[in-house]
Amino acid sequence: METLLIIEDDPGIQKQLKWTFSDYHVVQAYDRTEAINALRRHEPKVITLDLGLPPDPDNSSEGLATLKEILALSPKSKVIVITGNDEKENALKAIEIGAYDFYPKSIDKDILNVSINRALFLANIELENENLKKYSLDKNGFIGNSPQIQKVCHLIERIAPTDVTTLLLGESGTGKEVLAKSIHNLSEREKKPFVAINCASIPETLLESELFGYERGAFTGAVKMTKGKVECAEGGTLFLDEIGDMPAPLQAKILRFLQEKVITRVGGREDIPVDVRIICATHQNLQQMVTEKTFREDLFYRISEITINIPPLRERGEDIILLARSILHTSCQQINKQINGFTDEAVQALIQYSWPGNVRELQNKIKAACIMSDDKRITEKDLVLINDESNKSNIELNLKTVRENAEREAVNRALSISNGNMSNTACLLGITRPTLYALMEKYSLKK
Image (cartoon, rainbow, N blue to C red; front, side):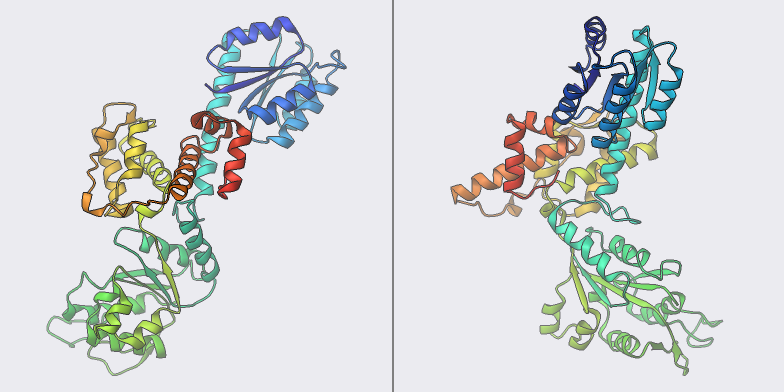
């Protein structure tokens, strides 16, 4: 149940409002001190406030002071001010201070109920948007709050303003191109082209002309001069995806381009200077390929001035739920369907699945479940997740480590499910709020 804080000094009105809003967990306060204590303890999203509070119930000064203190401590709270019928000036003053709405006495429970429900809806929407922004890099929507992803995000923010050549390493489906675009968008080249080419998807005989372009008559069918991907990225960023699959002869030509910043079109003789930033990516182990002589050592060191390792989805903990919620929201908009979230069993299934296809597989599973579901929430059955038993890791046998890991995971999971609401998190875990704060401090967890 959502919490509703009612600040009112009239016992009769207190009782009336408590019974009127039986669908809420109603918390009542008599004066400013009780109101602030209740605010700190219960963190209500919606508050009703009578401006006439003791010690000066005949004037609005204490009520307005209470309003200012509430908004200073909890600026996102929606405060509905209740005023006398002839207090229009004070009502407008409260709105100017930051109150969400005002309502004159005498109280019509149906009209006030509409106002409170609307305020709660808006508060929840704002909270959801705030959470999505908090867990995303600006300009890219790469969602994640795990330590691994936060480390990646900080690296990107540091290197984006520079022109350092960057190598992104990670399994297929982990979002390498998304991060490459993020680096581009956060750089001074953001208004210039971002050009991507997948070195594994183009036949070896065509890859050189795709990269460097060709002159008229260079080969059969070359009826006009055509620029390659490198030239098309002039001033911007060239993203070489799956560079580990680049044929050996082309590796030498790419190395020359990276060192000299010039290219020569197929069939041409002229060196053409090009100003582009290079970002490379692969799911392969390039260092092992260097040892096996299947990838040039000098090219490897040239493209890996900065290396970023992107963790697979199975190692990102509660990020899976954040991503799933975001993907579900987007999928519902695309197919014009209303689904409110996931059942508890579905949440458990999402976290326990190994995700061999990473974020790409998660997108496909959520979208399919969204299309097929007939309920208001996605169920475990809708997701159709089957783990490969051979992928299970070794069991940790140290009991102290097992207990601490389980405790940390339980707190993290409860925080995620409760969207960071401390009261709901403590309730889910069956502990008090002070105990929850102590556990969060012990394991360096953030709200």
